[in-house]
Image (cartoon, rainbow, N blue to C red; front, side, top):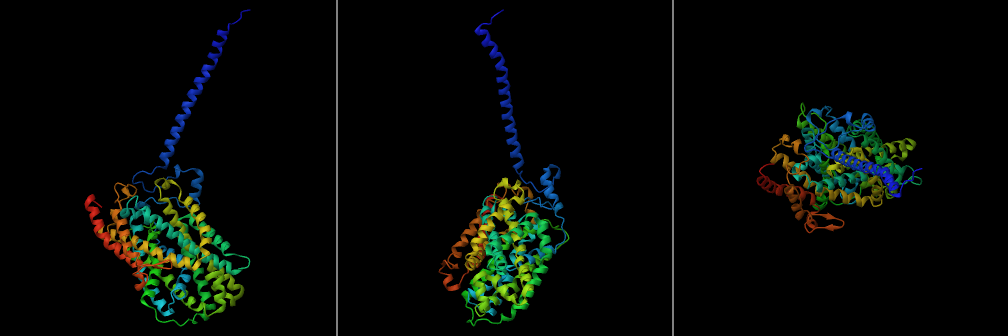
Length: 528
């Protein structure tokens, strides 16, 4: 029997082990290479090519995602829509989408501020509401034509003035503004639901209910929002008319107040301007899929303009009338102290018994269309914050929005009247700057040629304007906006004499300063 030496045994063990070591090394190298390929593949999937526009590729979608799209969820987010995919022709939807969104409770407490907070008479309030509504609905209605003509969302169009990177400033302000409108609508809806049984249902529960129903509408996207707004104006209108018909007998009980002063008129007018002109940041979001051929721009303008004006003016005036009567009707005053406008509407409908409670539920749900509009646009704004977000499905940002809205809505409800007045006044300042820049860019520098909004550069920073002129002009206006502000927490030296003229200064000064700033920017660059 032959015995092997220790050296021989060691050699044998090494010969057996080495192939395994080499195999593991090759396997490790292979895994590293696979990880590199996975990383490259992931980057490639998340990257957005220069000038990439929306195209449907169902064959490339995962099965679960395609099922969601087949169920009706909108696929596209902020990518421009090529003209061949702008196929919708029911232009009347551009009227109903805003008409229904504003035919809700929100304008009523806004109108109440005229008589409750500003101390104006019903007559003076009505005249201010009518004049400033007609005037400040013009800019957002005009800007809404751009979606149909360019196939771009409103804040994407803003890149052709503010640039690829500085547009983040109005982007954040617009997202905050639209979220604010959602919060205010959710609060009045929540107050109205709570008014049905204030001992068992809190305003917080009402806010959660209205937000969740609105979430379902905005989650589906463009088609669902338009469908909802096209039909739900009918129950909204009937419910509001019934409430006025049953409980309007006390509206004539107005407090005697002296004639309104110029500061009162300008301050409340600025608040009304803030209500309307901020829609300039979202109007194009709802017109991007409409065919630009075969319809006049004037017709599109009036669809959007009347969609703002027709529901808002009567409800704002109704709110002013309710505000003037609240202190003269004890039951209304007590209800308003507990559940705000929802409590007042409940008292107005009390004589109708169970039917009145049913109508009150319809009135509470009238805010869903308003919240759905806002949530839809907020999701688009969030998708613009970072380039990589463009590849993340739009509905993901709806989930983020609803997660923010509910807790903030509950917080706003705790100081409702102050929150409403401060919010509407302040948002008018930045919105005045934004609307002035975009309108002047289109009318003066692009000579109403929508073709200059080239899809090939919508996400190419070096080819878009740097945005210094737009942001610089907006900041320059603050030199007169700040002294022209009149807020509970600050009143500027000019506003002490004139009232709040911050919005007027924002719009006019920005327009005047943007003209030379943008001209110099174009001269230095050699092109738009």
